[in-house]
Length: 583
Image 1 (cartoon, rainbow, N blue to C red):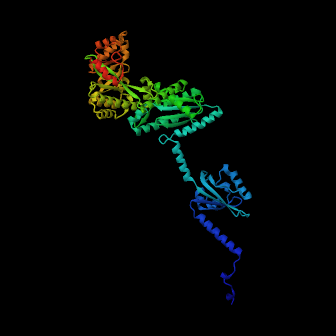
Image 2 (image 1 turned 180 degrees about the vertical axis):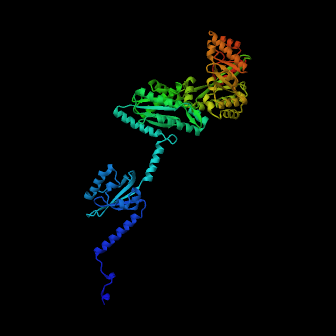
Image 3 (image 1 turned 135 degrees about the horizontal axis):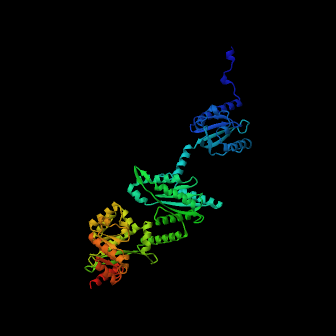
């Protein structure tokens, strides 16, 4: 009965050692099953000699080696870049020999095909108290996070349209390179580049086509810039070029000459050719400043000086420019404060009817008093307002103030007086200018013929068709349109015939010399004759003596304006002046 005598295997006693070994085997099996089931977690096991003893499927996807290719290979021969090799071997040795664990960290390891693999790597030592210690590396791919960081960096540091570095990147780079230049006694040049009249081009083409042209300009400039330099888009139609290695001003002139020539070639968009020019302002480290703020401000000031020289030119910063910049900033600040505190005023200078006597109309002249009670000359603040962009706000204020005054004069001896206000050429760029003026007149219950607009000769001649159409709309509505300072610009009498104007104002310079200069007298006579032939009334400015009064009356001028009749005066004095004329 041997079968009956054989004990059942379930009844055979199991020793503690066997039970522990069984549990250990079961634990290892479950451990390996677990790490194999993690598709995004790459796990590798290495023995004390750093040879691969385990390589899961996720490791194959991450590093490119199959389990068979990796098995038995050294860690440093598989995924460790050359520059990390010795450090990894030393760190592993320290853990084995001295129990100094390897910290978890972000690393860039190496793929089978050589490209970097960004991972977050953690390390676990198993059986570290025995001679069979094994190190397991748990790596999680950071590829998506890296791409997201790179995209975020690119968004923060590069311009989407031109793909050039942006202002933020440029300012950081300039600061770093200035520190380096200061240590090495080097030079840095900051070149501020502003495209001339690009707003007009943009408005004409539309923003989509304007962006395409801007991108083409950026690409052309980039092709001419040397690899050591940095071309950036500062914003809008402005670029900044940083030069770090150049042969003095001559080297800069040579480079910028190439940039000017590349722009002179023009650009083709959809078969149409477009010409683009630029103004260049340069400041040098350390001569013109030691900080990025100083150098940028001075390069910007030099660029504005280049525009004043006629655009499409190059200007280096000088102390004289700095004085003009300070002056400009001072006037701009005072002007802004005057606008904010409603410290602008209108004074009125009568225009006298030389044929019938009495006052025909009056010109509104802007006066500005700052917060300290000091007046700012229009000769100073009007050019600053033009450059700073404040002219449109001032123009709106003048229109509003003139209409309020006309409304206040209703029912008085001045109720039929027309007020002429000066219009800036920049205001013509507003496509709703005509609508805005007529709406303001309606708001104050005024007739269009109670308002006149004066534009200088240079502002109206050669204007765009859209600008002429706005003036035509205003004239048809009854607004009086006049050309101021006539004879000082580059007018064409043929063009004058086509303009929607009602009168011309002869510049005062002709009258001042007419008595002693026959040429000026002849010019005045010709202007008056042509004006009348075209059906225009003629006004002469600057009448200061009775002799001048007699001259302009005998020449047939319709209206006269000047100190002989009245100086510009506040509105409160106008009724007194009218009363004096009537007595």
